[in-house]
Image (cartoon, rainbow, N blue to C red):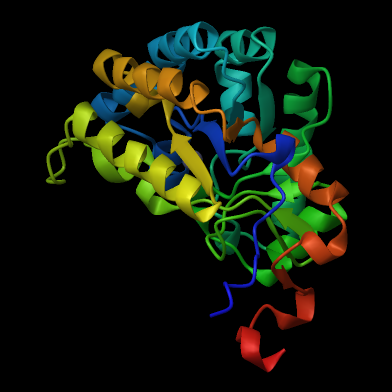
Length: 291
Ligand SMILES: [Zn+2]
């Protein structure tokens, strides 16, 4: 019997799989956006979220430093103006900054003009702090529309990291997509604000499940995209388990570990035949077999 057709993705450094470590530095911006019609009054949620820039970033930067792990931080522009020192610390540690709206507005709640204006404003603030223009975007709440993709391409961004249509980098609407996955988002497992959510899962169990994600990715030649939030994963026990996982990951010689921007650059440089999935702008609404 003939073997299966080899469709392995050409990862950087001839690796079998890849790991991106990313943080969405939301702080209190989602709450500010959600309560914009009424002045924010819930000091408890504001303070819980401010733990991110106040303490979480410091703990997580220590983990990244001790494991020599480069990371991407998606930062709303407003957060960069409110928590300048935390963002400066991220930049000083050499990590990538990328866009995450102005005040965490999901793009499907803005007109194209509003999206353009918020991202231009955010790009200026983030660019000033980073000393270079941000090249990537992650949509707040992982919402996306065809016109939002147009605006991202028009702004000259190199990549988006908000969609789940593949487990390897792919092309959507003229942008490189560095895909995400709810399973490897910390909020699904840990987020708890005392409003009747399910109790947070123990860090050991979460990191065990992410260990399985790494094993599966190495079996199947896929990307593991960790999406974490400093106000959530910056808590000491969670940071402690993350550090164990990163130490183990660096011991795997078939795993490439790098930033979303580095992976987007790699994907852009690949010959087209090696790029597996392409969804052109006018094909976004159609199933693959109809193209
Ligand atoms: Zn966010």
